[in-house]
Amino acid sequence: MRRLVDCVIALAVAAVCGSRLSADDQPLRVGFLSGCPTYHSEKSLPPFEAWLEKNYPVKCVHIAREGNAFPEWDKLADCDVTFVFFKRTSLEGPQLEAFQKHVRSGKPLVAVRTASHAVQTWLAFDKEILGGNYQGHYEAEPKTEIEITPAGKEHPILKGVELKFAPGPLYKNADHADDITLLLTGSNPGRTEPLAWTREVNSGRVFYTSLGNVETFEDEHFRRMLANAILWTARR
Image (cartoon, rainbow, N blue to C red; front, side, top):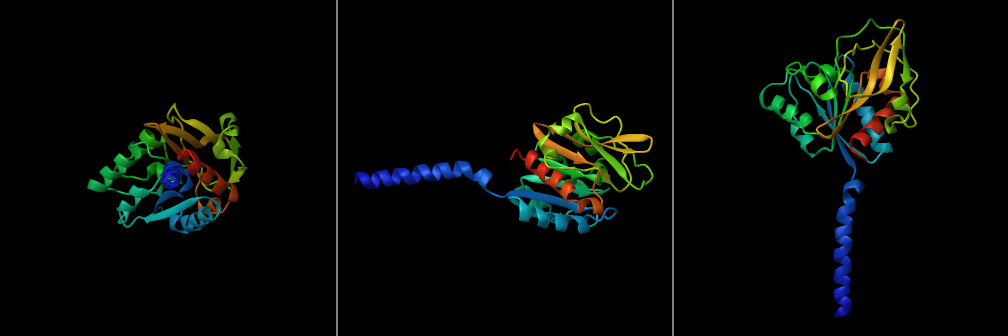
């Protein structure tokens, strides 16, 4: 009898310990909100999602925009991290309210390129949540030179990342929020702009980068930076 009791206690302890460890053992669920025809998010994100799942303990949930709404929005509720890559979408009614509540809640958030002007009906998303100040972009240059800031050299998001140049127009982001931690800057002749940073909103971690065209998404170091950012925002 005593042996049986000991076995039951051992199983109970193992179950409790297992439940305590399960959060970090489970794949991280990342919800990708896709809807940027300008930079072809539907071309860039699926290969990136496949790469993530192959190389990291991540499960990707792709949520595509149709018109001015996300028909599968409810899938986001079960995700640990939200990845925003859509543009000038006029969300309305319950879905706009749901998006505002979601990103204000302190849940981990990673945002790229046109996320700064993702919601046409809530342009304050950029300043309030991302900490940016998108004011359009310069004319396209052959390449943008990328530099790591002193804070970036010590940050885990840039561990193993060597980004030197990127194609595409440089975004104007002067007068951004004072509480961002700037990781990367981008320069064209005669101008330098913030390129990637972190921030906290309601104790939740946020990462934003204005990089994100198709060619950049094919860069292994850009992918690694985004993977690091996903894990960092989730505190993994």
